[in-house]
Length: 194
Image (cartoon, rainbow, N blue to C red; front, side, top):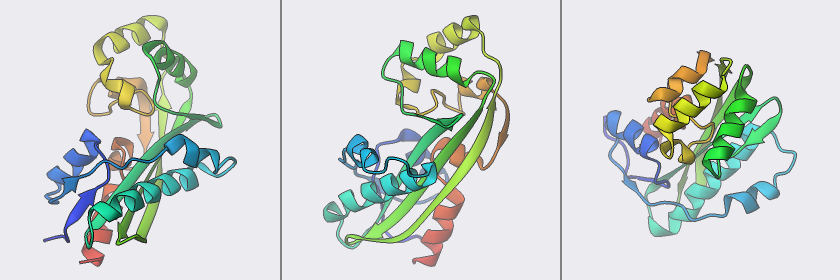
């Protein structure tokens, strides 16, 4: 199956790896948007709406650099007990996040949008629910010794494909959503837009 020319509006290694593993040829052009400013205009919006807005903004930001191509924007965010978490700003911030997550359910919202020539032609969001086991200080310290600074770039302070899997008792939802992009839906959209 061949897909249309695709540009990934991201420098995310996990999103690139997902597309590579699925055999989807693409190039990457990171989107340059002020995510915090966009989020500020979405105060009170549902998490999936915020993730979708960010995915669309990323795709649209890259469209001028890729005329005629499909541009894929994607975003993920984490909510625990109604509180939204961004990527940790420091190792201590990461430890604070993990302490808060301990024994709670993490909702991971991942969204993707496809745009062409300045218009969004498709968008989709999914949510995975990850039950975080009880984490003690010894585990948090050892985990960050092994995973920092790599998890600094990860919302939720984990890489599911690495030691991050040890944070959880159970996971409900797509593995790809947990990795940061609703890949099955993206592949279906790409087939439909050929």
